[in-house]
Length: 270
Image (cartoon, rainbow, N blue to C red; front, side):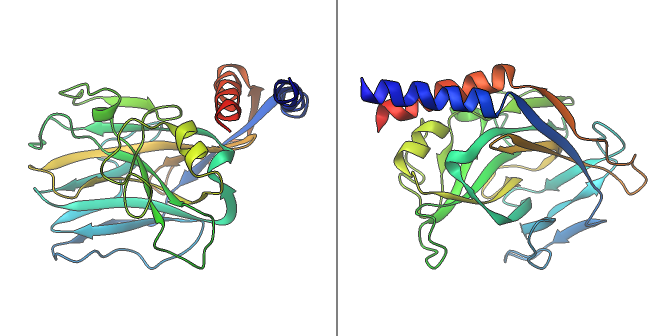
């Protein structure tokens, strides 16, 4: 009964203190140009916090903001390469965010019909996570990855059209030093929070490749991440894009409903 009362009180505080969600769109116009690396070793932009970088590019991969497949404006983050190529776009946070703080996680993606990689491949969306939140150790870091293939697979994925996928609540598989890396594919965000209650989110990324069996040509846009009541959408545009729109406010609605259900689920696991 005490636990139930605690959860009910927590939900009341959540509703009272967060009756509206602060959502903003950031127009991203840099770095400009396309980064290509024909070599086998990862290369990309110099490390920096709080700005999008072209990273982990190798084996002929290319990534950059272009007008090839415009979305929500005049551009998007284009990604392409031959078989076995890799290319990512990544944002590293200087702020301290817990995995348990995540309230939104979604994006738009595009696969061109010119791609020859197997039909289930599309740009992945990832959270870069430190398992215990201790930044003095790095062996416990890795990515929580969203792909349609594990949600369940819809193969072949749609081509020559923009697709919006909401990864909040979807199955996310792990890489690197995270528990169950490359072996467990049916854990959702709340499962991961229960398993790693102190995990810190170091960044967010989207990308293609790493062992894909054919070429890929496509893009991502409107990458959205929320922490608590603050949700940010990153809209990739060419330099001539429109000004950054004013932040908007709207009721929590379905999103907070999902978060509340997730909180209840998480509390019951503790």
